[in-house]
Image (cartoon, rainbow, N blue to C red; front, side, top):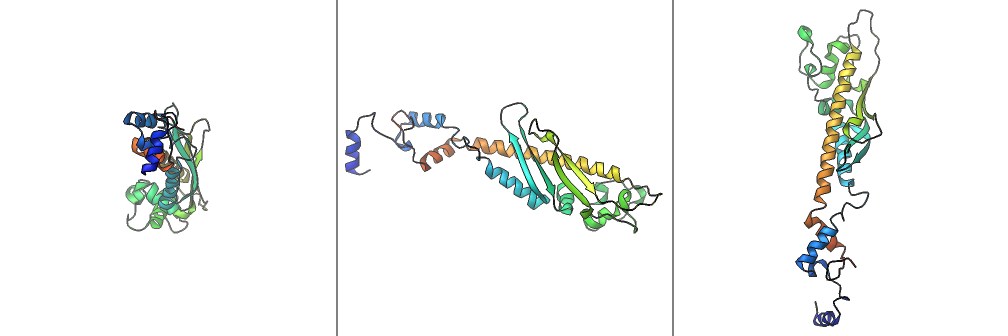
Amino acid sequence: MSLKKFREFLDESEEERTYSFEELSPEAQRKVLDDYRDLNVDYNDWHQPIIEGFEEELKENFGFDEVEVEYTGFFSQGDGASFTGKCEDSEKFMRDGLGITKSTDLIDMGEEKKSEDGDLVDLIGDLRNIGFDARERYSPDDFYFSVARISSRYSHENTIEGEVEVDEIEMEDDDDRDVNGMLQDLVDMTTKWAREKSKELYNSLYKYYEELQEDDVVKETILANDYKFDKRGNLL
């Protein structure tokens, strides 16, 4: 502060003076931090970095698109997060989301199981119950995965479930392939995956919410906006 400004500062009455955060006493600084603890979360879009990162992860790692997130938080019964969306890359999702890396991950083929080597296309084609022979074979592209909302009352993970559809194939009368059973297994696996990802999202949102209220982060926002206070730490 220049000598001239310092003299002007001294000439002002205490009630007229304005203070930056760093000019306040330690007691007044503590009051400011406590009073404006919610400064960084008191607007609708504070969560955007977490949700955008989540949507990007679902797309890049699991092939999901058209993702829509809902959440409520953080201190009431029924709070939680969930999402809906459609998978555009079934092979990526089956491998990286459901963890299907060999045929026996999905179904016990007993004595008739074939080699566990090969990529996912061959493995799905080898599954005994959905078309292991040369007549008709399924590939991952024949499956359609999505996550849908089953309740609108809350937003937690149990308000969603997986949905799976598969292209029809022509089957002989003596075929013993249990397509419906296979689909139900995939639905259950998809539901479990989606709910686990929803819980991870909620935990990330809560962690970020707490970080935005830490002293150093609140102080950084105050300094960046050049807020002014009276001597007692009241915002002017």
